[in-house]
Length: 478
Ligand code: MN
Image (cartoon, rainbow, N blue to C red; front, side):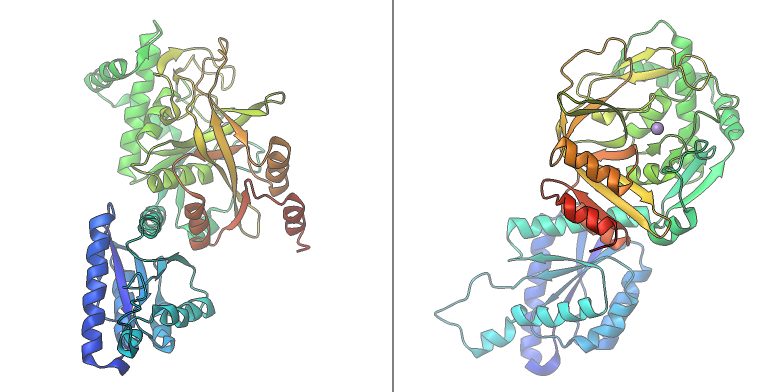
């Protein structure tokens, strides 16, 4: 299991007896956290009482792949100059846990010894000072460690750490280049690797076609039979469906061979393929593979990272594209040509084959369903030339009430915060894309922390939007 180091700060001033109590209390906190946190093990390190110990712990954390983050807490006062060497080397996410061992002040028994031992209220301020002075990007959780909210914040930090660890080793496969002439889906891959750790390389469509041809017929048949158990088959064109099954198996193998968890392709470069991979891509998205169309590797990568962050939670995450509006009802209809993740399905998906007017290929098989509901965000990551910008738009996914008999693709619909006009204006002013990752699985604090730890500019569009201020900020006049 992945680990988070728990660093307890103190100093020798109080004597060995006090340090024993610090150790005992820190151990009790760590044991409590390990009983209440999911999917992570908190590991108590040696007490942080001098520079060389802190430096050693940070170096260990940096070099151990199983350590995904660190939590720091000052039980007593821990003079921060001794933290400088260690914190300057820190390469993993850091949570400053501003807690106390005692929840209440023990009014009847409190004496100076108690005060000396339980002085997080000022010891942690010495710590936060050095974190601020060294510009260590970090999260903060405040309150008694047994408080449900605090445990929730620590869990959330651990989940972001896991997503970040995943993100920093993420390989993205690109079949074909960016869609011709499109600006927003393009970007600086070298800078993305520097900021986010994403490695995006191109592979020949011909190699994928060859791989597809090499998948044994029995394997295609077996997967096809599983599929028609899971989904409703609403086509007589079994051949078209099996072609997609073959693409799915080939792409899955290709991704595994290159240790990749995300990919992009483009309808402009499908040489040797019979169909645009619709159903195939949808099946991969359902398995947590990030995807975005038209060579949009940034959104594909973000899709897989946000899925990792929301893993195991209620709700859905997936690639999305703004298609068309209903101005009267102030709704957005989001979909893609075919590639909408079945994680958004509110109804049992059906497998259908219909013509596709773009791409000049044969009628592709796809999953068709109506979309789910819930509160969430649409996230768009764009390259501004000088830096990457993450735009997070608060949205409410709403039920698709009316039938759309002539639109045989999957779709979702949503409403925009704080309202349709202002929300869309802020999105347009920010230069955000028509592509996004829509998620109902992550919180605003998690998005904030993700942006901070990756040095991304974050523009938030939600109920607290101050449009005038945002406009001034974007024009650089604030
Ligand atoms: Mn698109």
